[in-house]
Length: 424
Ligand code: 7TS
Image (cartoon, rainbow, N blue to C red; front, side, top):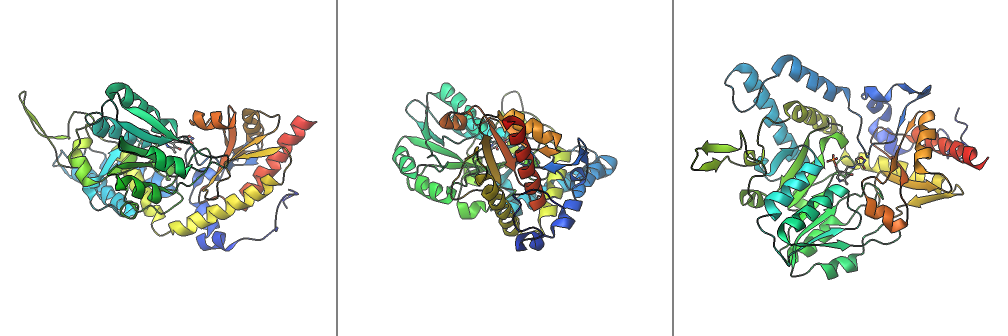
């Protein structure tokens, strides 16, 4: 029995959990079924990285045990198998994002590399003094620093859209800052430290009125919401496989074909060329022009298995289930004295950042770890967000499709324990 006094509606399982057959889903993730410090693991650090279903782990093992070979170059059987598997995943990614063509899907290391690629290949040859790049105050460092580097290289200027106390973008400021000098907008879809879901379709439509392209950082969105790049009409969309139940070291840059076709390669090397001589090098077709060197083949295959895993599940049902959990957790934390929620936007997804009066977030995390509960504490690579609230860090619980109300109840019980320890 759960002894948590804050637990609501005991034994009640909402429709969203039933719709997903949560018990069966949880069984698919081996790492969830272990004890940490004598307690069953409660994994609430999905914003940092998600756990992997067995099918992903098996797909990677199968590749190394049977098909391990380089892609796009051998004519032997193993290389053909590896190439077929690798390119098959590109089709799956195209479907997942509803991109118009596989030529728009570039495999990269993750969100960070995707943004750096756009900054260097799109921005560097085009931008110069007086040009402006518009980002927001709630960006992850990986959607700040590449643009700062680009500004140093080109003389362009970074402009920043502020957010309000709830963690919602100031849309009036956005429309004011968007102007004739804006050359690119780069905005996070779902904030990793606030949970805010930004109205990206609206931001994109406004930018397009001025012919300004928009990059959307989807690192925290893709595992929680259906993303349709054609419906959004974004120019660039970035994500990391490891937050989407796939391995680390693999991610996706989606970019409109016309933009990619007109961009310089990011790196030079094998596979990205069609012909090389010392006088002249011609580049390969899209998207290979942007995939220099031996790629992360096993990572791509793992990503394909993760997308296969998600395929029969309904992303809308996943989002609804997580929203319900977030609401359940938020209601309980709000009722606890001495707790401050950071990020209370009307539109939020899967992230619950908070502080406990008089307790450093690292201590919260350490005490919770003693109860087998994994959360993250720190600035979450969003130092400007911390500065906005006058904080150095927050504690952050972040949900994925396999989390349930028991996980939230354990978190709330753990927070009670933290408060007891610090208030005694
Ligand atoms: N953008 C956002 C919104 C993120 O949350 C992250 C990672 C990144 C970009 C960078 O992704 P990467 O896979 O290239 O590193 N965010 C987090 C986090 O919140 N905790 O650990 C990593």
